[in-house]
Figure (tube, rainbow, N blue to C red):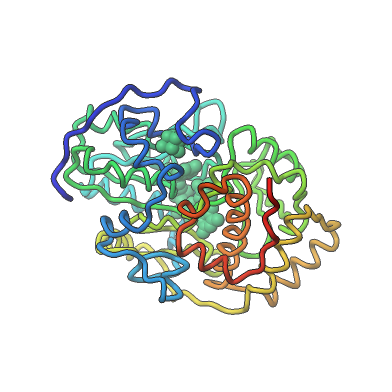
Length: 401
Ligand code: FAD
Ligand code: SF4
């Protein structure tokens, strides 16, 4: 790491007060700390800055002429993996939690920034600096809500930690990278997950109530590679709802404005990313971005079953057709949605092509959202890689306000 720079403090903003990014704030937590001093440069929604941060973290920015880097960011390798012995209650097989535990046990780090849930609400995020493996395991499984992971930044300095692992999603990691040299650390590791379509706690409630047969018993859910949402309930049962049967009209305003204007789906500034969408159904998808990410991968490798990433099908027609369907809030009857889900599962995009399908669908939607709602920001906020991805599709004209 580069030499620590002195940290210039400012008074943390009061809870609930308006944030500098206003409606676009993703509640990443930076403004809850004295590091709010750096918000203008660090906030992912006030100052999108992939290129310089990629240079800083990976030593180069993504190669836009390389189709895989255009989509998935700077990387050295991608692999599909499963933990041989999955962690009970993890989101997938628990690779994230297991790696964090291993790094702590072996003394690579003294603490791990992760997010547990509040004692009264399984979906209310509660960021912590975990100092034991039990505390890391208590943070397993997604809290599918905006989470102020960086609200612990002042605690890092106060606790005297020098070697730290941070687990987080793109907007949190962008802000972290912008201030990391001021944290007084000797070593920082960043383990990222992809992230998309996140919601406030109230938005989550609306999503569950609109979509699940039993919202109060949902333990976790995921938008799966088989084009269905899988809701896991308290009794262990799995409820599946086809994407194409979603009540699009009712759900249009459920996603947070930050997530409707985000282009960091694959967490381009982490050292190692662990998701699922580029892997076959039931497997996780690991993207090693740099040497530090490779060291982390090597540490957990023996615990994993591995296979090369694959890609098949062609996403483009499905993405193009989804654009007007989303715009008009089309909702298919459930029988038609199930049928379409079955057909597309059989012949549709798989592996990396499924990941591209998801990236294309979200980037086209988000580019439209930014161009309509923040026209003055669109040019600088939408990064070049996203502009290239979006330019493959025909978008409806932006109506004058
Ligand atoms: P676990 O071992 O269960 O650990 C999960 C870790 O996630 C914990 O350490 C916890 O600290 C952290 N975490 C939980 N909630 C949050 C949060 N709100 N903010 C920051 N960190 C959090 N992958 C894809 O491939 N495609 C997607 O579209 C996608 N969407 C996602 C949306 C959200 C909101 C989140 C949080 C993750 C998403 N992921 C996505 C990642 C994926 O769902 C899994 O989290 C990842 O594969 C790790 O699984 P695991 O079993 O190894 O994690
Ligand atoms: Fe502050 Fe983070 Fe919100 Fe930006 S996204 S205004 S840095 S809390």
